[in-house]
Length: 90
Image 1 (cartoon, helix red, strand yellow):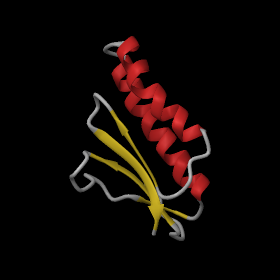
Image 2 (cartoon, rainbow, N blue to C red):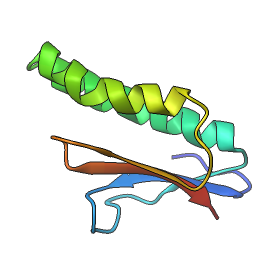
Image 3 (cartoon, one colour):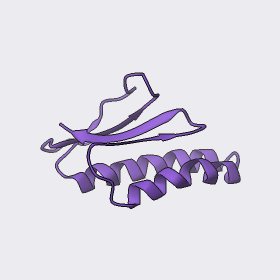
């Protein structure tokens, strides 16, 4: 993960647990949300290789939410994946 001047943090974790990796430190909100889109896309691709229809149902809602100009602080869970994605100020 790259680091820049940190004004925002972006990450994901199992709800109620600490993240398995360090959150990304970002200079802008846009960078933070772009990072989460990349992570969601990677999870979606992994799931789609097993069951494309289930993957679409699981990941499309959060992918859409990330593109609908969310505001900070932001958190969104993914039912069926037991993950929460989030952006907050540093």
